Image (cartoon, rainbow, N blue to C red; front, side, top):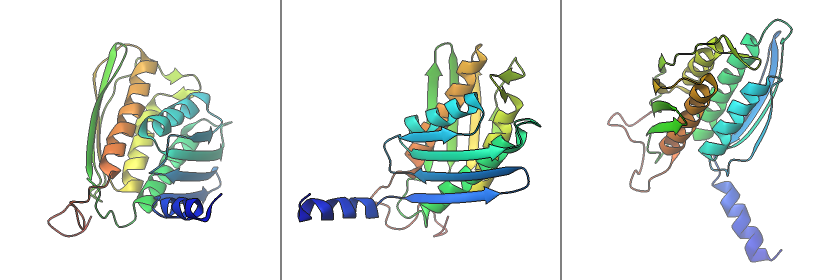
Length: 209
């Protein structure tokens, strides 16, 4: 590789917003790595197949490079693993954003998946809040409890410090509703972390986020 190309790659990598966060408790052992300026390359292993599918969808459709390695007390249930992945992923997003300089801050997406339509809107304000309005008609999809979808988004919103709204406009198939929620969240987050050169500091009248 030429010296010029090496320097180009080095400068490109220096601009990447990446973070690695680990968390180990008596219930889970989790490491998350995220690159907000990635290409949607994912390596996910939580031990919960459908949850892996949702995290892959999040990374791929948000164009985030994402690695998640999680070991939890699945002999009990999936609760601790999913909730703690949400906490660690939220912390990783917050860490990767750094000072939030020049980000557009807001993002939204109205995402269709077959018969389902889900809206997600978020603000990387630093003030956590979740408004959640999804309706599932089954207790479990694969080995993932549907009640854990809310717990995941609650955990990620509070750990990342984001105001997060997720609303099901309509839908019948539980798989489609859940996947549309994760994909719409991915697209909304992707929009909110984008940089705009016109924003010289942070997008706030207070001067901080």
